[in-house]
Image (cartoon, rainbow over all chains, first blue to last red; front, side, top):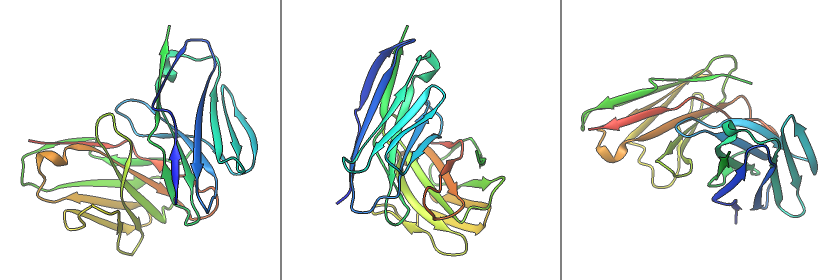
Length: 109
Length: 117
């Protein structure tokens, strides 16, 4: 079967670093996506990993280990505007996205 | 990134009426469009997948006669909520992608907030 799991909620301090983990199980895998969703808004694309390793984009980095079925999103130098839900999703063998429930990230001053 | 628009952004209607929501890909051709629903503080729920020129594929539990989807062109898909009821009040979001290959990103519209009185 397929499943994907991420923590429901995390809290971090402004200026700090936070890592949001995502684990998944699937027989067919075509990459893993991270999206950011602010309250009341639609998701916006952050990153895509299909090969093992770390992809860095400014303050955000995303890591993938296919053998472990594991990804994380790393946010550095946290800003208050980073308070949002972060959704991970893997693309299955039919090129469909299977979504996690999202991690609500709360940033405190 | 690619731009997807949705119209209207917000709609209030009376129970029993029908509401049409449009989703457009503005700068790319969307071979596939997706319709999601999201209730407050809950995760995205995929309602249906539509490919241009063919019938939409609905997820289990989604009534195809209630949620009519028409993917008329490579840049436009519409969702019509027929005979809307208060329990249909939700945030409806479309997304689009240009192909089915590896890594094809889904880009989301800004969403439509529906309130049925």
